[in-house]
Length: 134
Image 1: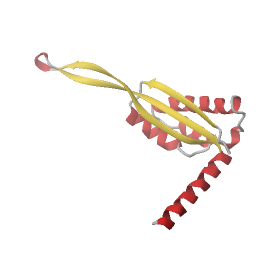
Image 2: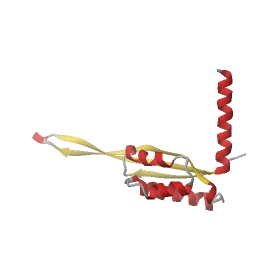
Image 3: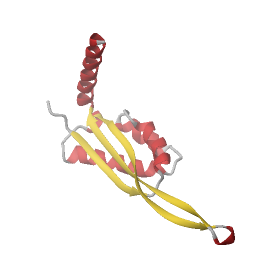
Image 4: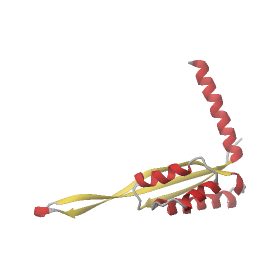
């Protein structure tokens, strides 16, 4: 059975990856309603950006793949480092310190809960196989 996943990617977001990962870790594995509630009330700068990305992925799933909105879960979400803009901050005696303005690439993938159950069953089979061979 081929699983249908909807994906949304935000590139060159002007938030440091370290700060964005704090928010992303909150929604991994949650259903869409829970993830939207968490992101709405999270007081971090990255939360509105990730909420917009989540809504985009949900729209992709509903409109393009014809998946049911109530059965959607966050399958995979991660933050990679984007470009680093290097700027100088003036210091004493004509010297300067480097300021790195970091950006992020945020990738979010959602799937329906029926697909999530089958992947968990496959994972359990793999773990049993691993235990038996050890």
